[in-house]
Length: 236
Image (cartoon, rainbow, N blue to C red; front, top):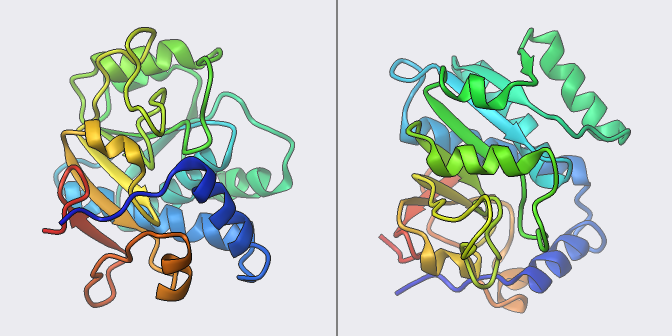
């Protein structure tokens, strides 16, 4: 049986509730999400096999999850490189960047060139709130993801996909179906079109709030922050 999915409106309402009555800060939620992403990457391929990771970060919360994941990956023994072209003045993102700079994690402006030299790419560009057109400088980046021979792990959603209706019929994301996906908190409806390895992460929501928003908490084991499920969210 497949895990129930969480649509974009419900996901936004859940985040709002977690940061109000749930008493979580955005920093906490980003830290938990980024940790889950880094654990999914380790489950896919440890640093002894594929040390070089290119993390593509967008300007929103999905990009923040990517920045946090890169820090954890560094401490796991990987060599991350960050592509973060649209940086905001938000203090949180400034702190996340500073933490990476203090670790001497490099930033690059050349995504396409760096993608040819890396072992894995983490797509943390757009999350569940994405809609509309892909704006510069990301069309070329997403086109490169679609054409890449390097494996890709997408964070919560393959960038350019519609959360409800899946991959685009045209544009830079046409034909893009990453090798792996980590759904944060719960799978989104787009998993119907996903074909790769699929993880759910974000082990902090209780059953009461899961029942309220009508999604399932997967069976996490031990101290794991992630659980692998079927490509369409089926329990393995």
